[in-house]
Length: 254
Image 1: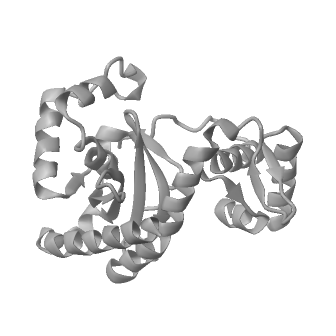
Image 2: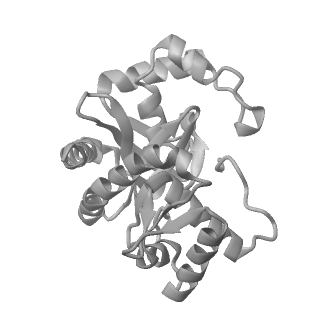
């Protein structure tokens, strides 16, 4: 099975992990309430409050008069881009929930930063055998559905620039000739199918989400255990994903 860019440490400290995740949310998304932090982490509100107060103490967060937390001085350099990610996540979640309601399979939204892809929104299926939430996880872009959808927007020179000096510990530089041919097929078809490239036993189908100028800013996808994937349903999946992407685009434009 292919893995995210980093393996968790052998002796992970939950409180440190929670605090770092909150810092990343503030940096990427701009603001967070205690209730929202507790829900995202799956902890009690009292725990989330203590974690956020520690981030305030160390200048990773600030609290406004309405008791909402924002990126503090340490994180403010990324606050503008973070607000865009927050808007994308907020716009995406209702449409991901509709996809899950229709197909009973997990759904995700992914963005690309250089040669990596980050899952910024995820809604799980309720089936016992399901693909779990990938929210916050980072993978090599060329191994994810959303990643290849966004790489497909690049021309040959831009693609080569993305992978110039690509780190060997990220899985090695892909064969750009083969990748370029695959991306050309994705551009022509308007969707991507990932059969086991990011994770063995998982098939993911996705389409791009575009901004008002027509630029692809994210990928929306449905992830299915391969034992349940039916190729005959691919046109139905793609049509539903295009509808979800269109809904996200409309909500982002507002």
